Each structure stands twice: as C-alpha cells, then as structure tokens.
Image (cartoon, rainbow, N blue to C red; front, side):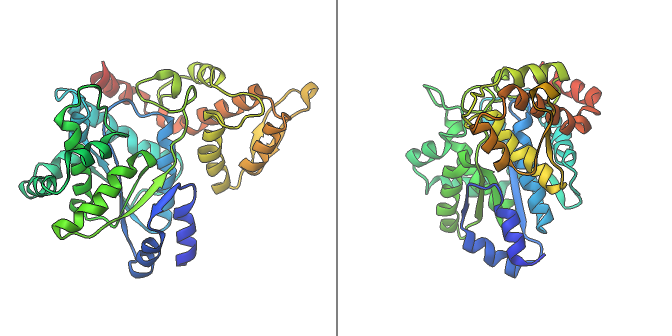
Length: 338
C-alpha cells in the first residue's frame, strides 16, 4: 500500500488530524509508525467503542503498531474508587481485545499496556511535575473540561489528568495519538508543552463522537443512551426501538452508528446493508452506501421502525463473537461493577 492509500485509510471517518502534513511525512519516513489509543476503565464499554476499534483496524491495515493504553490511574483521577480500579482494569483487559477482534482484524501488531506500570516510574512522575510548572491551572482545567467529571467542586486530580495524558505520548514512545474530539484540548496541551521539556510534538488523530440512542452523547453512565456488549437480544431490540429517530431527520444516534460502524464494516467486507420488510410494505431494501440510506430516509421512503429493526439485527450480529465469552465477562463485570 503506497503512502497516499495509507493516508486515505487513516483519514477515513476522522474529524481532524493535527497535522495532516506531519502524518504524510511520517508515512514517508517510517515503515512501521506507532500510534496509541487510551481508554480509562471507568464505566462499562459499550457499542460506541466499535468506532475507535474500526479506526484502530484502519491504522493496523495502514502498517502501524498500535498500543492500547488501559489508563487505570486516569480512571482513579476521574473519580473511580481506588479500591475497584484494578477490577475494572481486568474487565477492560479482557473485553477491549475482543472488541477489536470482533470486527475481523489481525491484531498481531496490537499491544495492551497498563497505565500504572509506566506511570508510577520515577522518571515519568518527575516529568509530570516538570510539565506542571509550565501549565497554568486555567489551561489544565480547560483541557480536562471535556473529559474529566469536574463537578461543582473540582478535585485536584482532574487537573493532573491532562498533564499525565500529555506525558503518556512520550513514555509510550509513539508517533501519534488517536482519540475522540473530546480529547482535542488535551492533545493541543501536549503539543504545546512537550517541546518545553525537550520532547517532540506528536500527531493527533481525532474521531467525531457518535451521538447516543437518546440525547446527544453516548454515555457509559446512562444505560438509555447506549447498548452494552453483554445486553441480550431482547434488550438490544428494545433500546434501539426506543431510540430517538424522527422520520426524515438523519441527525440521530441510530443513523450515526449506521454510518460510522455498520456501513464501514459492510464496505470493508463488500456487503450490502439489507432491510427486511414485508412484501405488502414494498419488500426488502438493499443499500451499498450510507449515502443511499440517508437519501431514502430523508425522503421518507425508509420508515424509522424498519431502519431500527435492521440496525438492531446488525448490532446483534457484530457483537456475537464478544458474547461467546459471556461467562467470563459476566464474572469480571460483577467484580468490577457490582
């Protein structure tokens, strides 16, 4: 795969790259660049995690070595009880690789790293303290605001969080970081402050955030907004059926999930998205692209209920490989979440 094709694959479904020129130069110079995606083991992972999983798959296909940071200390800094952080880490350690594998990607160049193993080393903490002397309380609070649960009386831990995330880029020895657009302020803080310690700026790759099934955001703390990987078929169908999805308006979580997850998987496997309907309602519909679905939905040729039924079927199918490990996952989940 040449540089241009690799670049297009990496850019697919991204919101922003800081900067694309730097990324292109990296692909020209380095045969196997290194990127990391971090997630703090806070709430239960949900189907929204399939979106970064697909981006990780793209990066693996583009020749990257991918490091997944399970940021246990960050979870504690974001108000997860220190007593249960280890148990939540174990749950994430089991389910995250299953999520990546569920979309059919080779994970030989995937590496899982526990945050505390790296972040408690003296040289790491020394550099965190060094950076804290360059970053104002205002800038650290601003960087954390879209990621950390700050509340009305913010704790000091929330301000430490973005400084540690910036330092992760250096100690993970990566060329790029992958994250959602909610991470942008932290990524910019890293680019502005790592050079002050004599370290290089990293390339920042950002996915858009997928809306929830209800409201604007898919949240681990609100079960109505998301589907858990251990939800059974009946619950999945009910949650999708109850989702916000107004006829003719594509601005909702069902259409976003279809666009960024289902149709991406369909395209990669050269398959069509099929909506099964009774013959009296016009029979089955087949779509090769998201754009075709949206066109019919906006024109009200596609009913929200038919769309929801098809999306629910696809979700059930996608997460089947994960649910095969239900017994061990339920045991770990019970220990982590009670």
